Figure 1: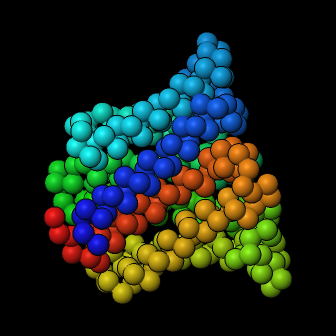
Figure 2: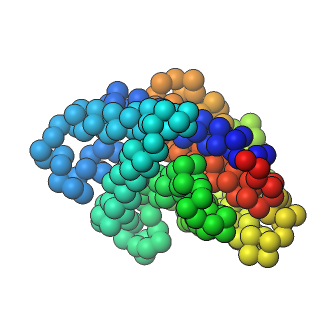
Length: 279
């Protein structure tokens, strides 16, 4: 995989994900997400939720436009990077809000409504690689793209060992032709433990492979991590009410579409650690 192919793949994944997210917010889907985010900045009392949705959606659609324009060298990439930073920072700062945490389960690192929020850590490293590759070393790009992968797999994977999370994924797992068999072999909690253990194990192994520069370990663990993020995309097809706008554009869609960013992170890692990039 050369740099051109990698850049094409990243531009596609970023544009597709932000197009769907932008349309989702602009059309007013899942207003609770908007309220939870902008209440942190006390904007929900000043601006109506529909207007906030249009604002958020329009900003994401603007990011799509600038990403594609920069990719085809129609404009400088500065605007795309700035928009990506703003779009990431606005929700990430809300992790400091008390409504993101489950205090009754011990607080940090038990996270509630912020599960989808932490995924925004994946965005800026992709834009830095896409448009500012030469500003950082390959090792720095690998580290910046590995950190969000490890964070989400360790954090959300670790949550699978808790009863509330095990019960929360039942509706997705039991309707999946790829995962429903787990409930014939294990209990609800047992199946969740297997899923969480898989996430945590291969996140650790990927980090070990990168540290040791072991290509075989990077390939095996990287493909395992990739399977996690690709599996979540199948929920858009297999979940109840699949193929509907409510599945694609509302809460489930907003949550799993962000996993496309992690596919991008893994593509960057593979490009720099497994394949020899050629310009």
